[in-house]
Length: 196
Image (cartoon, rainbow, N blue to C red; front, side):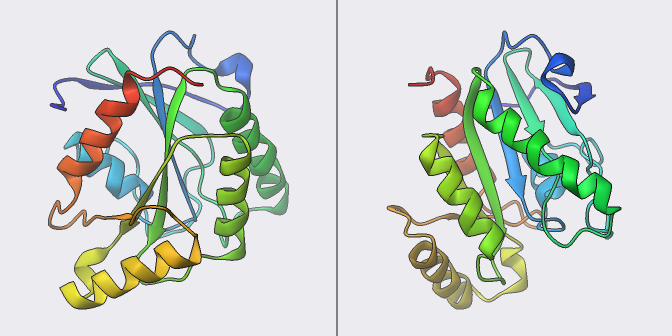
C-alpha cells in the first residue's frame, strides 16, 4: 500500500461527530505511551500528523485521518496510566467502546503493545471484548529497536502465548521502520473486506 495523500479530517467524541462512514476505517488502539502515534506517523511517513508526546494520555479524542482518499486511519485515545482528570478517564471507556462496537465501516483494529511489557489486565480485557464483537484485529509490538533480535523474538512468542493468539504478533520499530510494509499490507487486505 503506497501512501500518497494524508489529511486530518476531524476529531470527535460522539458518533454524531464522526465522518459519514463512506470509507473503510482502520482503528489504532493501545495503552497510553505504547507508541501508537509514532506507529501511525511512521506508517504514513509523516512526522507529526498524529501528535506524539512523552506524556501519556495526550490523545483524548478520536482522531480521523484520510489516507489516499480511500481509507481512514482512526487514532483512539490510549488507555491505562494516563495522568488525566478522572472525569476524562471515565468518558474514554464509553467513547472507545461505542466506536469499536458500533462503527459499521471499521475493517480492522490495530492493537498496539509495547514489546518490553507483558499484556496488562486492560489489554486482556480489550482483547476479549474485540473477540466477543468479532472485530478483525492485528496485534503489533512496538519499540522492538530497544531489544536485541533474539529478545524481540522471545517477547513476540511470550505475548502470543499470553494473549492466546493464533498467529505471532507483528514486530515494529518507528526508529528503523521494521514491520512497516507488513502492517500496511495487512491494512490493504482488510480495507477491501466488508464486516461480517
